Length: 145
Image (cartoon, rainbow, N blue to C red; front, side, top):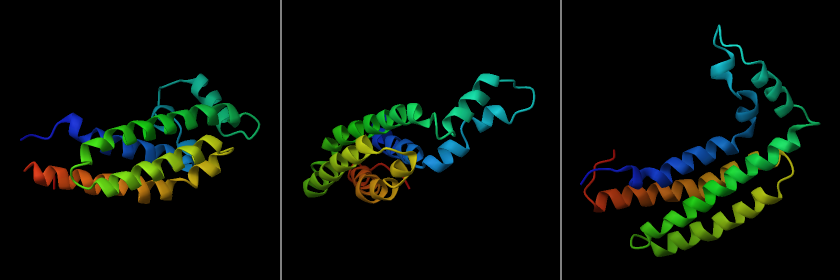
């Protein structure tokens, strides 16, 4: 059996969500790969980056950022049903903790509060999903390591 995009989607979403939760790096590195290249002239992005990092305007970015995080976690939680046969108790814990993390993200008022969610998301959702994924692949006789 081959490893498919469908199989790795929960893992990919966990990685993407961890990137979004690392708000310090997100804010500091926003569009660096484009802005740092010589010859690329994107004054709009430079202006956008300044607004993102300004305390007076960053709240407009925060709401969109929270929305992306919540959407990713919702998708991850939806996909946990594929791991029910492996460990339904662990899946139940992931669902419970994931919903709590969604609430925390929803009520976060700053990027720093979002950053405070990262370790809990990693410990309560991302790592258990990773363990369940590896176990599913072992049972399916798919080599992933």
